[in-house]
Length: 224
Image (cartoon, rainbow, N blue to C red; front, side):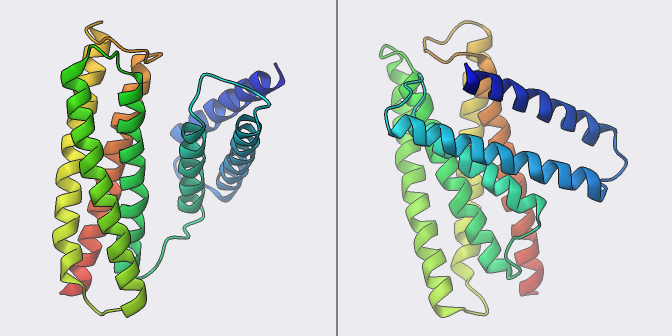
């Protein structure tokens, strides 16, 4: 009950902060500090929750990896609020691609695990996305390692790779959007608790496209 009460308190806290952000003309230092502290507290809560799960002290109907997943998302959000992204364009875009490719891969793994076994076509499509994003993630990590070791002035392969990343995330975003529509129409057999979950992961794909696209533009400018 205590964990549920804490979760509700965070829901109310972030709802209030969202209202303040939407009403603010600019993100003033006080509001930013409140946001940062709220995210830090939420990260601590998620980490406590994960520790309880993996030590078998609670047994919620949630994947432990899902709790780890949303904790990493919160840490990434905190980094954005603190503006602590790498200054070098190559470092920045590869770090963001590694982050989002892992997030996208896990999204589709979670969705596959919630589909009814009879949804064979959707499961097959999910398996294809999992294989694709597993390969993209491995490649991103390899490129990130090469870039770290060599510290090149330019790395043309990253430009080609980024185009492939954006194309595949767009395809996955469309798949998520279609799944959300099916859930809304009650045409999807699954144990997805609410269509909002599918809309949530679709919006995260939109965010990934926005962040990677913006960094791609910066990288293109630095190469001119």
